[in-house]
Image (cartoon, rainbow, N blue to C red; front, top):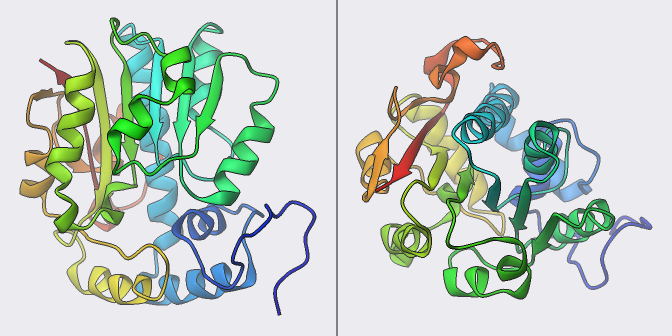
Length: 269
């Protein structure tokens, strides 16, 4: 039986689990349904340190946004932003500079509904309900054009989302379209699942996600590096999430080789 809750957007299919709501569950959030939790528990059985992986990825998001702010970035486009939880991009960026502007992008209904509610009183942050694999829909959206100045550098964030983009959709083309929309000096923060670190666990997790609306496609370090074409990688390059500038103290510790996700930041040439 579907759950009856007052915060569910009209028309949402509660019986089909989504990656956004699974991630919310792994981070300890409450905006998920029974089928999402069931999928998440199977994901944890396949990948026992799934919660740690989620925390590592969230910590990378925070560190990369702060790095962008330090580099002078004051406007951000967060693709596949997910369901609002503590430490969102606008909270991090606007804490550093109250005039920072943020556009979130997600196609998932709960993520869009709750982001819209959370941002209703924030004139410098908003969300576009769109598929990130259709860059023109994102880039030409009135919200995007209204908040972002395409003549100034942008912080482009693809954190923990591109492993849901299948090879047949040409991930390199998608990244390149976003890259080409922004000026030199823009920064890309990117992270995604890989088989390089824990192949057996990752293979099991991929099988689990085949039953969701968001199948998963891990990529190697070489494949991820190739997506940074047109960007100069910031040191230390493509590394496990826990090893991307852990000296800031804003990481969750643990074994980097168990992070499950590679991450990196690149500067648009």
